[in-house]
Length: 183
Figure 1 (cartoon, rainbow, N blue to C red):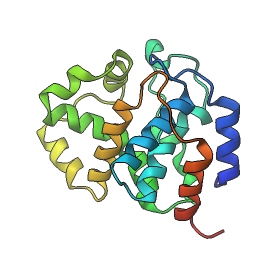
Figure 2: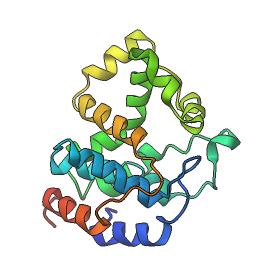
Figure 3: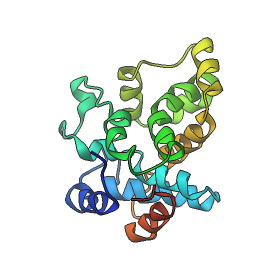
Figure 4: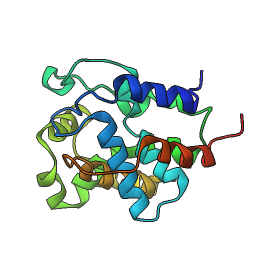
């Protein structure tokens, strides 16, 4: 069953206030900051929407405050996919699904990337399969949409600034409406 944009708005209203694990922002603040970074880099509506919704899987399944501290990979990059596939095209869904593998890729190709990750992101990296080897990195970046997932991942890593002002959720939901599939 696909979510609607109203369902997504309700989900953020109910759970967006929760802390983004190990970071000084809430789930909603992180989502809005990520979408803002995408918007500031002139991303299209699909990629801004993916930036907004990339961690929606955290809100759909509650594994407690810090699953990585319990040794649990929450698979959040996959949890939202069945609910979003009927609402958005592959450009949105694929970037969301690929943003974790993009972290694994960036760690493989950029020696400084891993060092800049937060502690929680480093813990989750291990649970998510670790750094790609050269062959895995080549295979990932050759996939359709991988470049978009990498852009999303970079914004994801930067979207953790306490007190940063952003447009409201309604602003980004309007952009999402423009790229949603027809009802």
